[in-house]
Length: 420
Image (cartoon, rainbow, N blue to C red; front, side):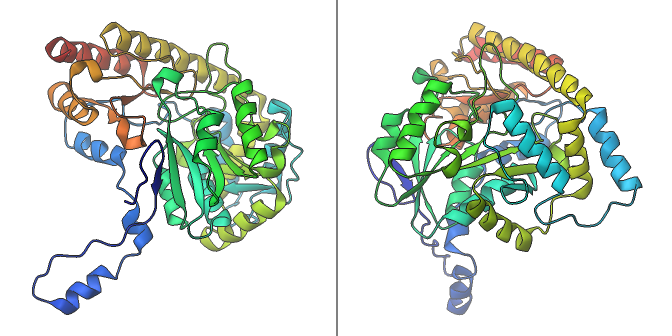
């Protein structure tokens, strides 16, 4: 990929690599032109590779997958099943059930003092946050537009920018600063082609969070440079200790320039229901809705009914609090265990990931992850698979059961006694 030197790394689609000649020049020309440059430029997922290897092995404890081990709470299951029983198996409105859009708008206003979104024009129900992120990039980017992306970050961020024809300006964050993005880093990354800033806090893969003062400093830069902000807040309820989540669009002057992304998968253990949402200014959401109606038509109908119950049934909140308490116990268990065995790990205060340094083993993150999997059957993900700043780290998800986390830690202690 084309890169600049120094602290910034600008990723743009590369030219397709020539296919080795087999003596058939016509076939060679055909194969090199069959794939788009954008698709070729998207790197394969580092997460998927380790899942594929682990799937071929017995007795593997996976700390790799970021999926709750909880079953969706009863109010959502009942609502989804009842929707099907009542024959609600057709498309909904392209934008989603109006009742659900109203519930999303009301929840954001009540919980985070968010903008007074118009559910008719400023809220869109999507197939998970993954679709919402894809729509946002497709809606705002022209070829060559730059998006500042702090890293390490979720693997789809870079891919979505590239697939929309944009260029990723990746800005590394580091454990020494708790993986927090600074306004100075954003200032240094801005060029005449900068269109947007993409942030995701609480962060996958690091578990990092940002407080209100840190968010306000970023907001000031975004406003001064007239940047759009895409804020992925899928883990908003999964925060621990004394941290309180801040909705970026609720900050002064940010509602008019922010696309807020959220969803049901992580907070409510509803990954398979595939319900996310976007909220923001009517012109931006209208453009996203236009793409959505051609691409998807509408999000799953039963999933929307279940999501409505998640936001309106008071017993659903009890289930969320119980899950957060359980994650908090797992968080403290895994972080304390990692630190005790010599894998230095800063305290993650959000999501369900720990991001320990493995440098004292003398291995890089790829060798560490491969040897741990082969020798002790524990799956973790190399940190560099999530971008710069992830070098020398691995991601350990604590979304699984406490029992499996404790077994994984025992196996890792054995591994560290040999290699640490």
